[in-house]
Length: 247
Image 1 (cartoon, rainbow, N blue to C red):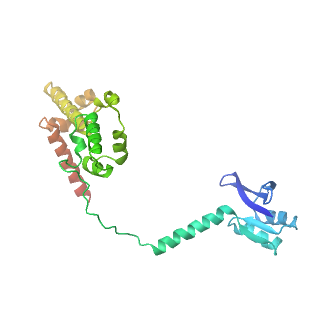
Image 2 (image 1 turned 30 degrees about the vertical axis):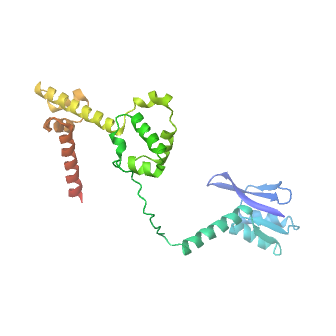
Image 3 (image 1 turned 30 degrees about the horizontal axis):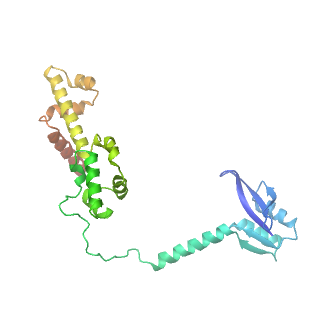
């Protein structure tokens, strides 16, 4: 009773064949080839083989039939389980609908008096954590808090476990709204800097070099009315125009 399988001597280039005694689990022999002639020759040197265990190789199957016509060929454990799994998947795909409708229970997941995505309205992460813990103590589910605050379930679980002694770690962290304000202030500062250079008589190339930004960006900064919001709307309008033109 022998199990036959191939293995890579050099992946995608050279392969060999290993013969294992099924009863003892010990390696009987190793061939530096998996070609039909070499494998069939080895099989013929052991006329007492009665059972072959193999994978789906056509070459091995033919070599076994030609050398031992009366021997039994069986699939190894791995391929038995793999074939069974594949057949089960195919059966499920054939019998189960692609879309399954689940009736709504009618229960709303948005908590009253909380605007959706309200996480952006908190000044610090600690304020957000405090409200999450309060909502959990009031009996609201993780799904309800997630839908109301725009947080992931894992984040809510994490925030619910934060202790008061960890307040210093979160009190200084900025929420997305604070980050957006920081970006806005930085953009306005850049625009003011570009206009200051322009008032001194600097050329576009000179301003771009001094500020380490693109010449086009300098031109847009100088054309803006001094607020980041107006510049952002202008850039967005230009992007929309380019997309419509390409379409």
